[in-house]
Length: 441
Length: 154
Image (tube, rainbow over the protein chains, first blue to last red):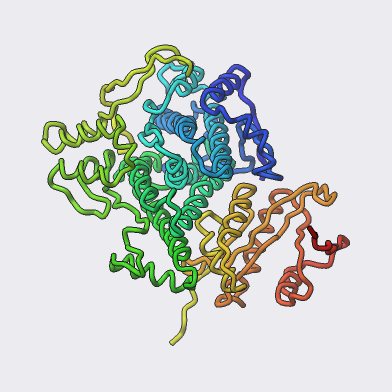
């Protein structure tokens, strides 16, 4: 397989570099230390990478068997609009995650963890750059209602935590635990999206996926490997990291990650148009299965560190017993282990939006009791956030019947830039926008 | 009763395979060393995640083969596909699973323009040497050399 490397027109390349100076301040430090932390790896390249030799016929949907589309005008207007929304959302996630990581990067206890996340950030920058290449190398003006590529790029570069397309990218990190849990949980959804888009009927998009996916594999490792190491430290009594702190971060990110798949009942359009090869629920089910495997693996690492004399088979038996009986074993309680929250827990979009379900699937009838319960399940610093305040206000209105669920789903406020586009500008404020049309259902 | 054998599936390594690799390694060597495999998996996943392979039977990982492409080492300017570590759970040996992982890995290397595969083996390890010989590996013009250094004294 061959990969073609492309650079954006200078003014756009410079715009990304300018953005990078604001949000990826340690970029030069990463490059200076590349050989120390990633010896023998190819040097980082801020460029678009297009895989050569991918299939040229549409694999799924109503155009299956036809030649893949090479330009937006070969798509119907509806298809072009739909794909443009996917590209814009993808670009927003790439830049959004860098802004999130930047907030707590310096708090990493280990330099290796910090440099791994730095590399993840640099590669997310490249992925955003990749999406810009798709926006700028084609004429999308018809699908974008006359908006030019450069305006779309400007809009995306002006977004910040609070104004991104998807909720998962509008939450600040509270500690470095969030950097790692985000990589393990939210980047995993990214892997699913990229994998599904490998079949995309728009060939430049399909060609963009394999190089991004190869980089994404390390992003997941940058989440899972530190989690495994932390589980060992927690088991050995390190007071600076606990399974409870990890669990609370999982509670914060997992519901938002599930919502990134789109409404559980949707995804038909993506499939019909040949842009993805799975519907939302199908992909979400596989994701949940994978997260369940990840959590079990980390729990096994924890137990083995707590009981170094146990064989791995015995550890697995103990794990099975603890999961089944929810009891205790030699001082370890079920609650000391990580667990995957119920898929309906703390949801605000999709099928279970605004239902009051606990992490173990238990329903709540009283909204105050539910809010108090959430306060025991989420990271303390996150409780003091604007997001939680808005969530609590909204869930109370939904429970009281004064706000319909459908409206609540679309109502979360956004941080909107109302002045210039450069990140130097501070002209932003919180606004509640008019409800947008629902997506994917 | 006839025992029905679950079909095997060879696929690229991912970060969730570390636990299984640790387990297989422990079955083979008797040593539990998760840190080693966390470090190695991190290395291969960041360099070329499509190169290293695992094999599953019934959804359970029972074998692994790790390697990557390197250029310029020891004066070898041509890209070489290096096979560094592999292991099969002893309960699942004798089913050509190693060969299947090797074929997947070779196909990946070939697609990347590699014309030579390389590895190192302890000649006294007849099992591993025999396995590599059966795959088609031959003695190379390159020779592995080593030298013991005297222990440092204070």
